[in-house]
Image (cartoon, rainbow, N blue to C red; front, side, top):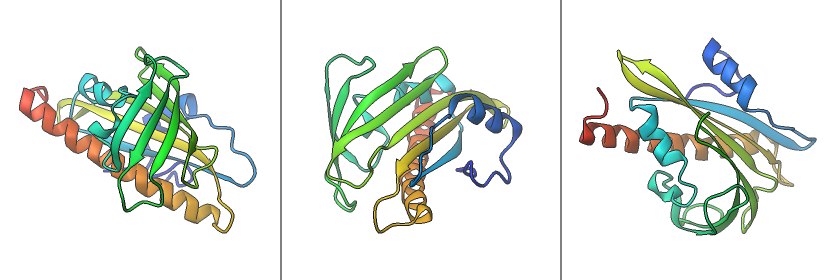
Length: 187
């Protein structure tokens, strides 16, 4: 289940609120939109984090990515070129790794180019341990800020980006839960 966005806090629990306040700070300028989404995954944090942290392999769980080529070794500032599958209003995206914290499980990316309308896009993903049905689980929070393109409203832009993130988070859950079941890592 993908939880509510930061702009619509109904149903967002205290842990989510606290993590969003602490780790998902975006400077939202005029003519920009921002939101946060929460996904609870029935797989342990190390498994989920192993997928999220792979800046060079987003296609392992992001369904709209067909190919990724990372330039350099995976450090802050590394740039990747992503090819986007057909069906979206883009074919490429150039993205820079902003933060990769294996201790706190924080991952941040900024889009720096591409043939799409997501200008000044930046996202933060945090991964947190939790217990789901008495078993190790993971809460994933993803937030973003992006310019509202000319001709679009704030609501239209947020709705589009949220839809993409919801697909990515659902796919992350599906892949993680499948891997956990295969390896018996959901005990």
